[in-house]
Length: 431
Ligand code: UGA
Image (cartoon, rainbow, N blue to C red):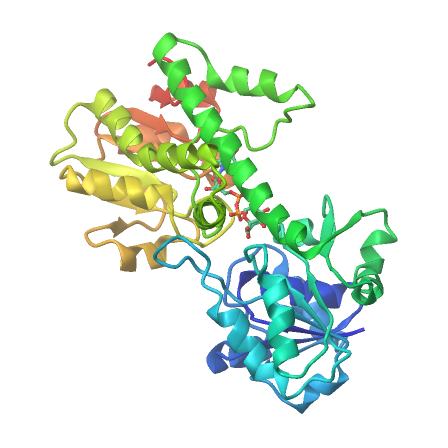
């Protein structure tokens, strides 16, 4: 099929490249001329493992093109995916400006049979509003909702091996188009879950907030383990073995971040408040995650005493591993608190270092983990990069001025650290 994808941000670019991998001919559109010029040269502006290979492959097979702006070429397209950003407004609600401005851009170029598929995360009612907007402009295009469940860092696998593909529509006409688009995946046994527009839109928020809820729960459980002398690692493992609960998203840490969970919880709060439907759990998730960096600071101060004037090394700056994304990163939040307590920070991250140095003043970015640790009173692991598992802990101990190793992700092998004579501290255990 001939498909178009509007928006070459994270979701749009990954979807465009991988829809081409499924055999479709895809045109990726963005109003950002520089970004399109870069993509036309085969350069990807984000870091996502494996995506460059699939883009090269799509280029070689002539399955993908990039266009700056809308044009007559849209006449040959069967379906258009809208993948533009829906950032939070000041009141927490999703800003839908880009959705409607993209409709304004494409409207004069499309015939009535082209399907409009909204992939951006949008509040229930948005696809209906898109439909009405098109009708007002004299268009009768069918509209579907098709939320995305990709995780940064594993987006390629998530797209090609989805747990389910969710599709919402209120008019049957679009069902066959959606089925045809995803046929290469449903042919291999993947589930295409069809529902109405409002439910499909809400499924996205429900999924993200439920996962955030699991993390918030295990983080508070981790605090309780520390206080009463239990071990959260064993607890999480045993609880997760219950199939009704599941082991995923039960890893305690410095709090969840990124561009999705924090934004989507606020949006769901707004959605439920708008209709006077109390959703108390959401308030608790927001509150506990907000407190997390402060709790991490207190733990560091309990271990080290005052951090004023001390050098502290931070390993990991991105909000999680395998991405260069620093948005709502718990690591940056802790660094700000440490700096406010007058600590000197030296940090290392495999991908996020360059941009972090531009965001936070007085943040020294080292070329590697060992340089970051030089003369520091403690090293704190903030992100679960595989690279940190391979560190030579004896060398780290030799670099530090005091042998304090604080693992706020609970993921480095304790025995390896102990063998190096470092003092190992983690969350969810009595120190
Ligand atoms: C999340 C969802 O997992 C995707 O399904 C969804 O498509 C995406 O948001 C989105 O809405 O676009 P993402 O933000 O890329 O994906 O990252 P996750 O892997 O979900 O991690 C989110 C945060 O939770 C990170 O800060 C991570 O470190 C933290 N986390 C995750 C934990 O602290 N503990 C865990 O056990 C798992």
